[in-house]
Length: 203
Image 1 (tube, rainbow, N blue to C red):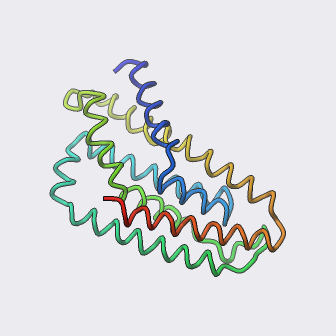
Image 2 (spheres, rainbow, N blue to C red):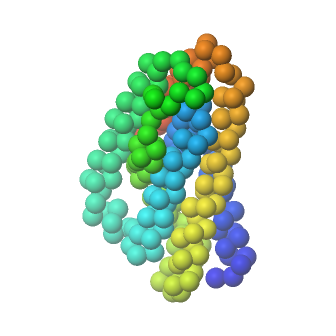
């Protein structure tokens, strides 16, 4: 693969990330409720999932998605239940000051949420089944090319998702009184609920 190929791949992934979806909404929700740093762990989880997607695409995602279809369905509904739980927690979250992290979701749980959202999104599977094989010859990739692709895709996606998190975090900083914080938590709760609905009605 040439540098132009890598650039085209990176640009395609960034365009994919720009289009709003469950991942972007979840990141916005977390950044509004708990701040920029907490939302980064959702992004890390999404990056991890896409690394796995890249590797299994190269080594046989179509076989895995067919043979383990029930597993993907299980992950999807586990994600929905978890997102509904987060929505409930955010709606009932007490007003807190900037330095009070007692009620914040742990980094591990944010990472898990990001991973589950990415793994349960059928659009990602369709993307990797349809786009990567059309973009490159997966059967003749060199080891270094596999390494580059595995690095480029999650980083390109994260570069866009971080913008969502940053903008939401800036909005949060502009609203620091108790009533504003309560409103942000309620908005975050609704956004998280919408993410769950998107997953429910996405085939």
